[in-house]
Length: 402
Ligand SMILES: [Zn+2]
Image (tube, rainbow, N blue to C red; front, side, top):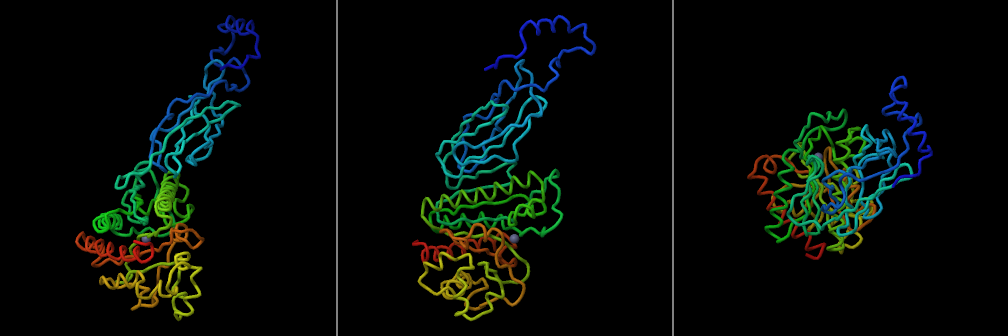
């Protein structure tokens, strides 16, 4: 579509005749005012399909031209998600020297909804449409540059492993502040936990892994500390948390409620640390006093529904600490170790964000594994994975109806 020109045709004709004689030429700059957008067209990215919450593999590319078919450069293009609750990465773009913009587009977390994106500039607009498919259990889905991986399941259980990554791309600078130590082999532990649960229960949990090394991104922090301004790291952070949200949406759709584990490793001592957002101080109290603290914990809504006092849920018989102890893994808090006696990880950003302290039906915890005999070699990792499957089977049966 071409808007009517404000220049009469005879003027253009005159200009063409005069062009060779004018100083400086006029081959491509006759109008002195900025080029006016006359067409906005989609070049690529229309009619794609991806998994719910996933990246459409081709960037949405659009071209902005003036009435003479020349690129309109450095022009703001407004991008809006019209349908499907998807998201785009980054701010509204400006056209490049070819008049083009490229937009990374992600599908919304609810599958099988129409996905639609509209780009607008200079009173013009163009729309792309896409499809989102339900995730297939056991498939591996990856995001931009394969920094984040999502392996869906059908159990009411979501496992995230934010600190097991090993990738150190040269174009992403090291983070300048915060903790940099990788949680050794927690990526491999997460894979084994999922396989062992499938072996034992016939169904897999949802697993989300960050493969970037912690020196590049810490997915268990808010975005400022996590990515420290690097756009690729920020993008991986969004992918990690959107896919975790997508997994939780699947759990709610399939089961109504569920459980969440943020998997970590520490090197302080030989006990597992179970973080329910209760600090060492919170736990250094009597059971009666602990019973009052349910609303501050990452088991908040589970505690409201449980048939046992809150302190029993945290450190009584049947608590996760008790179940790990029965498998031979010393744990705190547990019936044997009511509270930590030294520095203690009580749960971080992910446990706060994705657990149920603020409400919701998916409660969770941060699990800090010790290293020796647990993560240090493939044999110990496999033994732990099988033990964990037994623990989780009992816990899910008790609290989530099996
Ligand atoms: Zn960690």
